[in-house]
Length: 523
Image: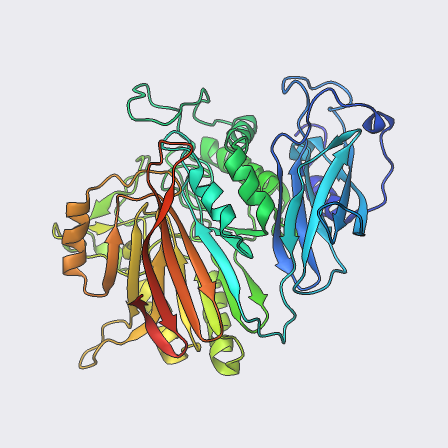
């Protein structure tokens, strides 16, 4: 970051996202000796009139910092109605800045609502893989169907990404990724039971995080999933450090803040995000909580449960994880001032849900967030400190908002726990009042990451929590949501063997939520 200051970098990133007619480097027309598009292509953030197109250019030798890779590189892009690019709708050039790892975020505008398109990038004589993307419907449209994949947690060593191959075959309209896109850990010394290993160290700087994303994005099944439909992404902890909160990690402040800044920059560089996500100089923050509408059928409230949350209750400074606490031995747990989302995001979410409730125009209000919202009471009496269970007052505020001004239908999607949970989201306990179902919750298992528990223990948890309709820890996979005006169907898809790159997939369970009737019903 010596060649450009942080504030200039934000301006350049915003400019590069919208530029369409820029001078081209002469060398960019020459023959390429390698594939500069080795990390694939992606799209995201669909609007009725536009979408973000992403790629990152790679040099032939990653260690080569010389010209022309030392400076900006101009890449060409095309967007067409057809995969053969006979009818090109939009085209232009974009600048890949070395300060942003030569990533490209093209914000295409002027498109038709509710339409599929194909796109590709070109550099010299090199042409990227063809991606498929789409715009969202117009604001007044009530689409007959929306198909969504939701997924999270894809630790490299714990499995191959066969789940993404099956997810792509579902032909989704949209993919929601709910956190832990990368894992910061080095491969363990004991390789027993691992699908694969990698040589990277625990990240210490921006270059290390960039290498980590390049590793994950080198997987062909993940690349194909990115290319099949637009993605909407949010993060959790492993994009930076296990169980961190926005202002604190296990390192002292002098080491922590530069590490977090590097991780957040690398995240932006590798995700199909708009330049508007860059809200402060130097990647001191990213604007990841946002709303996206799918016409009148659904409105997504995408949350950020890492950047603004308070430090976990009764967690010692410098500890490597938040762990669990006993409520009777941790008075801090019940402190009403503590927030999981940060007060500003809490108010933003409550205002959006209240708008859904007032207008009744949105059929399905969706909370796309990181983890399990519903409580889990354990036989041991312990309570998780790093999930919504660790912030009970914040959860109660959200439940009260849903109870006081309920949207027509609310569905909560989550990840993080590497287990499949299906729950009735119940109203907060009140004296003399019978709890009622406010919403439906589907918390998904991981793409590959292991659960770290046993089904017997999970069964014991379910027995103590009557609002939990399904709890499974042994499967890896993803969730598939088929959404219509009349009902929401969630199908839990699982791999036969995550250690097999060619693994088959099967349906673990299916649940339906009917319009106007909160709570999942087994199908």
